[in-house]
Image (cartoon, rainbow, N blue to C red; front, top):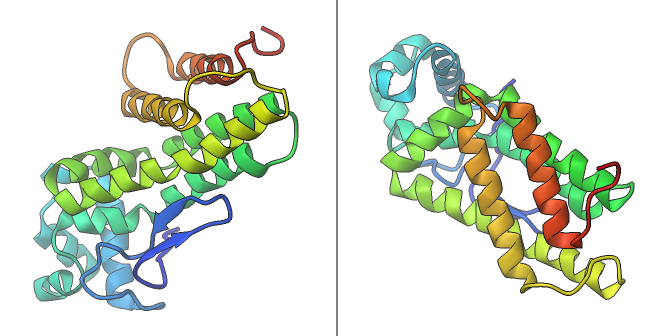
Length: 225
C-alpha cells in the first residue's frame, strides 16, 4: 500500500519530529491524483526487482501508463519520486520513535520496542530503503531532506534523556542533544548495513544497538542481561 501525502510542506507530529509531505513534488500533491499514484506504484513495483540506477523514467512512465511529461510535471527526477514514495516507511519509523518518547511500559520496554520497530520498517520496505540511499547521493534536495529528518528526531530524544535524568532514572552524562545525535547516527549506519551478508546477523545488530543505547542513556547493564 502506498500512502500519498496530502499537501506540501513539513509537518510536526506529537513527538516533535518533523516529516515531509510532498516536499520534493514540483506541484503540491492532491488527494486522489491518479497519475501521480500510478507513477508511485510503478516505481515501487520496479524497485522490488531492480536497483534505482537500473530504472529510467521511461520504464516508470510506461508501467504507469502516463507520458514522460506527466512524470516531470510532478517530479524533478527519479530521486524525488523515490522520496515521495518513502512516506509510508517514514510514518512507520515515526510510530516507532513515538513509542520511545511517549509510549507505555518501562524505559527498557519502550527502547526495545522502538529499535525493533525501526528495523521492522526496514524489513517491510528494504527495496525502498536501498533506493533512498541511492537517491540521497543523486539529488541534493533529497539529501538535505534526509539529513533534516534525521536531525529532527534529536530534540524529542534529548528531551526524553533530560527528563529521565531529572527524575533520577538516568545518571548525568554528556550533553543530551549531542548524545541523541550520535545515537541516531549510529542507528542510521546500522540501517545502511542491515541485510549485509556475514556476521553480525540482523538480529545481533538490533540486540547490540539496544544494549548500546541503554548503556549510553542509563549507564547500567540492561535488564535480563
